[in-house]
Image (tube, rainbow, N blue to C red):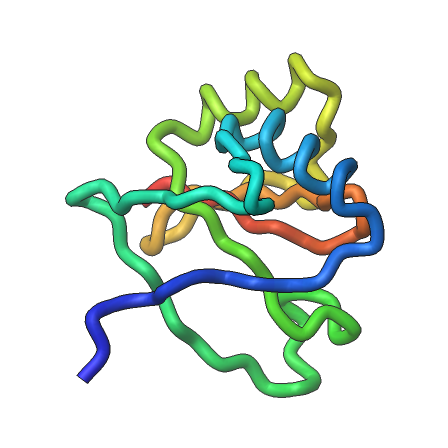
Length: 115
């Protein structure tokens, strides 16, 4: 019935700082309407998954976690180091791909994934 996700929306305490951070860190051009249209790459997949309330995969006080699929995790790490964004968990590799985690300015854990 659905064609795909139409968007991800959330409230932020400091709109300008959050827009600037996401623009710099992920190289997203944030438009005047406070968002961006991200067109999927043909190899991109969107995962829709539920976690139990007590699952430790991401912080319990965080109801939703963003996961961005990246082209190259090593280049992403290099970019993050250049702009001073630290990893908050060690890099992991599994049968699902390579993963790293960072936090946005308001402390939301974000997962970056190379499949």
